[in-house]
Every structure is written in C-alpha cells, then in structure tokens.
Amino acid sequence: MTDRIHPGQGPGTAGPGPDGAGFTYHGAEPELIVVARAEARLRVGAEGIRSASGADTSALSMFLADEQIALEPLFGREERLAQTPQGASREALPDLSLYYRVRGGGERATELSARLAALPEVETAYVKPGAVPASMTGRDEETIKRLKEGAPATPDYTGRQGYLNPAPEGVDAYWAWLRPGGSGEGVTVIDVEGAWQLGHEDLVEKLAGIVVGNPVQDVAWRNHGTAVLGIIGGDRDEKGITGIAPEAVTAAASFQGIGTAAAIHAAAERLSPGDIVLIELHRPGPRSDFQDRDDQVGYIPIEWWPDDFAAIRWATAKGVLVVAAGGNGGESLDDALYERRPEGFPQDWRNPFNPSNQSSGAVLVGAGAPPPGTHGRDHGPDRSRLAFSNYGARMDAQGWGRETTTTGGFWHREGDLQGGTEEIAWYTDTFSGTSSASPMVVGALASLQGMLKATGQDPMTPERARTILRSSGSPQQDAPGRPASQRIGNRPDIKAAVTRLMPSTVGTGQAERYWDELIPYPHELPPRLRLFVAGAWRNLNNPAPELRQAVHSAFAAGRPDIRVWFSDDEVVGLVVAG
Figure 1 (cartoon, helix red, strand yellow):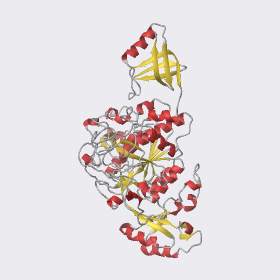
Figure 2 (tube, rainbow, N blue to C red; figure 1 turned 90 degrees about the vertical axis):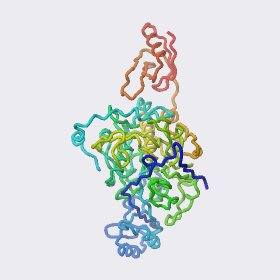
Figure 3 (cartoon, one colour; figure 1 turned 180 degrees about the vertical axis):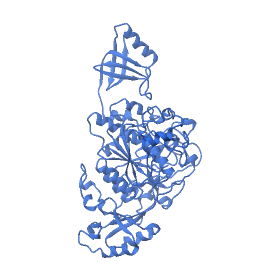
C-alpha cells in the first residue's frame, strides 16, 4: 500500500475550505444506479418495462410498482444510444443503454439497491454519494445595469491574476493572446457542476447559459460555478478579471435532477471534437466509507463510479476533451484500496486510477501551490503539491490550488476582493482546491485548441492533450513531506506546448520598419518592439532599454542594418549593426 501523507503543519498543509477549515455544500443527493443485464435488452417507455429480447420482466415491473419507484434510462432512449457518435468506433464505446437511474428511492436507496440487484434482469445496483464541488439563473442586461447604478466601478484586478503570467508562474496566457486563435476562438467549454451566477458583470461576452439540468439554489454553489467560469472565460475589458481563454464560448450543465453521469453525457452530446467538458465535482470514497465530511478527506474523482466512467469514456471516444478535478481528499490514488471492487459495482469494473486498466481518457488535475508571496501568503514551494490534493500516477497536470483571483464570492458569502449587495459584481482572491486548478488547465487547453483551429490543423484528441500536458509545462516541485514523487503533474505552459504541437522553423531577414509599442493594447500585454521582417510584423516582448534605443538610432540614421531571427511572429534573435 502506498503512503498517504496529510501533514498538519506548515505552508501548504491547510485544508481546502476557508482559512483551511472545512465547508459543507448543501443540495447534492445520493443517486441509486441500476445496471441491466445486456442479454435482457430492457426498454423503458410510457407503457412500462419490456424486454427487446423477449425476457420476462414481470418480477422487475412488480417490484417497482410495489415500492413506488421507477427506472429512468440514465443516458436517454436505449435505441438512440445504439447509434455510434461520429468519429468513434463501436468497440471503443461503453454500452450506455444498460444504465438506469431510480426515481423515488429517497432514504431507502441502500436497501433498494440490494433488492434490485437480486432481480433476474438486473446485473447490479449501487448507491453513489452526492457529488460536491472540489473546493439562480442569470439576469438580463437591463437588470444588470439597474443593479449596478450607484455602485462604484469595479477596478482592474488582472494584476492579481498571476496565473496569466509567463511560465513558470502562470500558463502564459498573455503570450497566447498575441497568437491567432490563442484566446480560445472557435472552442466551446461546458462546466458540469451545480450552479452559477450567469448575470455576472464579467461573464457577458461569451457565456451561453445552462444547456441541461436545474441549478442548485444555493449561494455557495453559485459562487463556485461563477469562479470556475471566470478563470476560463472572464471578459477581456477594463474591469475585474480576464479569463485565460476569453474568446472561448462557455456554458453550464447542472447535474441536479438528472445525475452527474447524465449531465456529462448531455454536455458532450452538444459539443464537437476538440471542445471541452469540465467536471468540477468529487465524492467521498471508500477511505471515508462514502460518508460526507466537511474536511473532504478521502474524496476522490467521480470517474471511479461505473456510470460516470462510462459517460466520460463515451465523451472522449467522441473526441471531446474531458478535464476533471482530481479531488481534495489528500489521497494517493495509487493506493491498493482503490483496487477493491465495491459491493454493487459490475463484475467487469476495473480501477480507473490504475494506468494498467482502461482509462476514461479524461485529464485529471491536482492542486499545486502558487508562487510564495502571492497575495502576501506562502503555501509552500511553487508548484509543490498542496496537502489536500489527491496524487498518483493517474494525475495529468496541476493548476493553482490557492490564491486564485476570479469572479464570484467567498464560499457562501460575498466576495472577499469585492463584495457589496450585488452578487453580479462579486470577486474573490481566494478560490481554491482542485476546483481552481482544473479551469486553469481547461483555459490552457482551450487556447491551444484555438491556435490549432486558426492555423487549419485538427484539434487535439483527448489522448494527445494528455500527452502534451505530461510532456511539457513547468515541473512539479518538492515540499517538506510532499515530494514531487507524489505526482500531481506539471503546470501548463501554453508557449512550450505550442512548440510541441506546431513546431516551426526559424526564419531570418532585415527589418524594414519598426513600431515601438510603449503602451500596448490590450493593456494586459507587455510593451513590445514590433519589426516588419520578411513581409510580416514580428514581436519582441519587453525589449531592454538599450536594445530599444539601438533600434531607434539605426532607423533615425536612415540606413538601418538590423538582422532579425524569428519563429512565426515572435522575434527570437536580433543584431543591430548600424
């Protein structure tokens, strides 16, 4: 059995809640899932339950009637599920038509699961604990304007978003914005969780609303979802924050009323290959005996449950990228505990955390420490594993798990960076957990997908995306008691990933004219010296004062002799001869 270290002292050891304390999200209900036998070929309709293979379903029908419960196809009509998504092979897909959700079980779920599993048409049944975030519907523009009247203007908080900065501090979003498609153009991201403040003032330009499910009516859930969307797609303007991929279209899918697996499947159905589903949820696992805990110890990624795994596998087989929070349980996912098949899971279930078994294809994200001194706090060495973050060979990448500046309030309260009476103008400086880490990885992937599309290339497949994240980026660092061998992966580096995805040759030429951009636009970009070379403008970010003066003098003399080496539109070398 591998080690499970959850130290309680020093930087990086606090829990995922406010000030390191626990916190409870309300409203998530357990789910009772039934897996039918394949040979029974069950069909559920208005007339009741029948078998397409002619099996006798009377015992199942009688049991459901006596207990006043009903089966609902988890992923939609069984006949429709037989259709293979474009681009996927039939063999690669799980059989989603076997999964059903029980409606009406309530507090009797555990008892009913055992009795359902004994029926001849049923392979097994199991109960899933309620999913919670791993850390109201929107208002129209006229309402937003009315609510903001008399309120002070929101300041520009982008200077506090260190995760936008060049690597290793951030993912280098500023560099990406200078590239065609680098702001996430042409990419859609759907966030699967519970609720969002869709009327937020900094989520106006590209937010498409809720595509499925009913939001949880709870301010803590809304704050969580709002914070996630801000990291990915916050508007690029003069106020508040800016998302890593501000031109990506974002949307939301709530699990309430349909369950997590159905929400994942419904989200993926609405997307095209190369788009992204983000799963911002985790559950109490076997370490905590599947019981809710405020400190979230023992919580694990939801792909461990068979129906969620099937939904994720279906999405990735279709070519949709799935990114999931790796969980705040402080667990080693390599632990032998996760090899044990729980009672009620299908016989063919295999531990998805074990790389030797079939993978869901999702990107699992861990929580790393931001650079020491961020917002005046120290959570340990930059990119070291935070103690609450799960870890193991299954983890693919990390993002900031603390000090994340974004839209939304502070847990179940108003924003700690900007509060006030209007929820649509709340901002936080302290979004945390694998919940804050995951949308950073999504933002980086959306930026990369946008650049690929802009250059006429195919977007990354799920497998390619995982490979790029694992083979590039800023490496994980050691921390006392939390060595880098407790894997959470690298922090994405968009610029480094581009060199692997789109290798380009270095060109050279003479500078014909120049433009010294002392005040850049957008204002978040660094000062640039722009040189027209070989028929196009090439950019040199943050030029040294002496180099800038040398270029000025060469052109002022009327006979500039400036040799420039460039890769795409970036200057990689420059010599001023006169």
